[in-house]
Image (cartoon, rainbow, N blue to C red; front, side, top):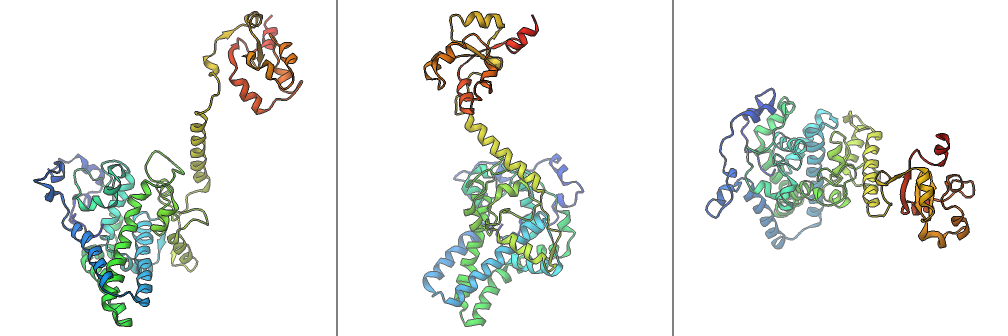
Length: 429
């Protein structure tokens, strides 16, 4: 994600009209097919990404200890952090990977330059990986599979070479049809160097004479923060938080991840509704990317903002709430399942009541032996009800019992009446 794609532009998937059929072709051996050993570990390392991932923060930290941070440089670093970070979230992610809204050509050009300053690979390469991530979430075909561990999904997938025999295919024919995206991909190295390193340094140098500060803070350290903010969406957003809409996959929602990633932390929502231009749907949730896209729509710079129907979103919320309630219910005693209770005729119920404290409510036999002395209405009421169908009394004839009473009675079930109870019994006489 840091450097230019190692996949050649002529990769077969981009020539095929149906890239998903490529899995039928014979697989070539790759070093990642072999386990990592002491003798071959260096062959597994991605020597394009790894030096940058290590070198950029290392040199940046050196600069932090040797170069004073001025007020202007600090402000510029923060501003450029948001410009390049939003270039990724609003550009690479929501515009080009998911087509969740449409942008005017001037905005697209701006986002191409801004996102290039984040140095996370070309639009074509980034979006291809991200579309594969959504299609194959939590599988070996997922480029940054969370099931392989927090470190792997955060940065390990770039330190180690990707295995082309495993990584899932994704259709990016729409991106290949855009001449600006093709141009950026073809000359990505130049875009990354100028926007990632040269521009932030030159602005600080020409603006207030702080070239080294601009290089160390606005370029290198700013870039480190942008990298790991994005990486957190691949890693932390799959480990921290709640499954608000679906718990079958790892993505989760959490405000901390949202704060770290310019609003991309409500990841369970995003994986459920990837075409929605929003990541956070509540007004109080942090999502500056959504705010930017929405604000620009008022002046026509963005348009066709996609929103998933509220009715379907609420379905997901309610289903998960119901699932959580069902799990909590399993921790409580609800009495023996009615379908597993023995069946008695009404005559058998009456006969059994001669030796047991049985009463019948709504066709279910209850043994009230343990409750006779505790009955709020008095012991005599229960003792005079033994062997009788007291459904009418229970449901308002004498007293309309509460849910608490009904829940308590569920633990006293011992059988069911064939035909449903005394009333049904009389009909069959």
